[in-house]
Image (cartoon, rainbow, N blue to C red; front, side, top):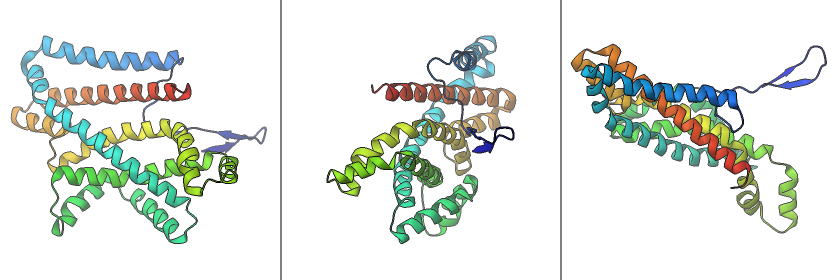
Length: 265
């Protein structure tokens, strides 16, 4: 996003993100905030079962398979979304009108429909024709939804690489496809890693929506325990803390990956 400074007339760049701040090396204040939240949440999760074994210990014993399902769903979906996003991004910059038009329509349509509606549509509405298992429908919906956003990230990343890179590659005898694959895309990956990391974290949090499809994710398992024990406050407190730990942990991993790529390691 850009704004114009009223006094100088210069264009100012304002960065905005829907995801968590990814901690970067050297940003001590940001890292301290991350450390307090991350280790604080872990400390609370450890303390609660010690202080009150009933029901906190029982809740923590009930959730592990839901945590595993949530993580598996997130990893598979972000992988599929990245593949869809790559081809969508290439389609958005394609010189072939039909391919470019299809990619543009896909992005506009998918981004204009809430994820929850897409989940209902794929599982229930299309269930009249396709009998998909809940997990498959969840992965499909998340991949299609986030593929549109990833497509915009890839498009912006490719567009940010200097046009001289493509011209130099073509002058060396490489085809346009070879230049994209060997020169442009490797540079693009380094540029788009932070926004991709944010999308990964956002997808993890949005994966809680798949509980409506009877997928045994973290939230679904929490709902099942709460509905039988009637310990709603305790159950959802633990679920919220587990989600916080997962998202902060992933944000740290993304930050480490970004630092290593910057230093070419």
